[in-house]
Length: 79
Image 1 (cartoon, rainbow, N blue to C red):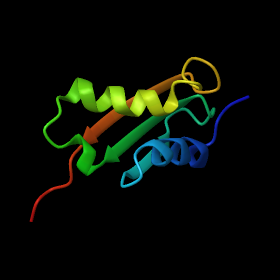
Image 2: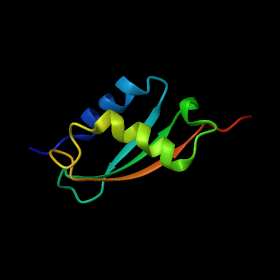
Image 3: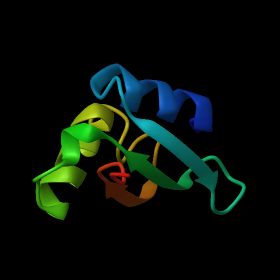
Image 4: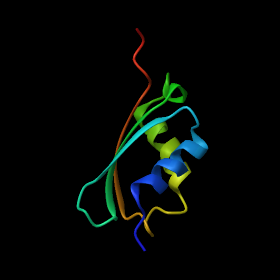
């Protein structure tokens, strides 16, 4: 059964509480999403480390209900 965007956002926020999450359904099938995640937790981490944090939050769903996730991560802009 496909996941909905709200469920993906909730899983990410459960593991990264301060995250600002934007989810887009890329194919309209509930299996292929793009996520943009902004969190202070990412500051000073490499892109790979940032993505690993998000994938840890979704590990139970990746490859199952969530088939593919295009991911963009960053720390908040200072200003």
